[in-house]
Length: 174
Image (tube, rainbow, N blue to C red; front, side):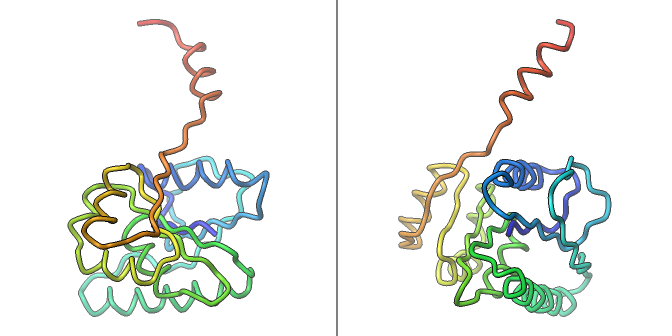
């Protein structure tokens, strides 16, 4: 299970979709989104589940939304017999961490160095995750040093090299 707030334009959304396409030949992949409106990426062939719990305004509404998302995710993890739930972005990480089940490994993705400024969230993530997936060695080192986290691994953003070469060769040079 891959979890992301939306599939609208953005770097972490692109990484989520690319990861899903790379894993699809080898695993039963489900991409869970909180709001499935305005999908900007090619999701053909992917199983997408929209839980319909988009952004809320106000602190209390946001807090209740996190709880509702976590409850729905926990139910989905059990229904789908999910082995690994890998989330992309801080809001998806919160819902994934709070929906931890005994049978599902929780992998939380840190896709940006800006996430390192959220000390309370990081402490929570380190305690509740089975693996912290970092997009750079620097973030991984900092998690190990500042938060004594030994559950980190660096996984660089995936690229579709064949597609890049195909697109590069089809364009006229400038």
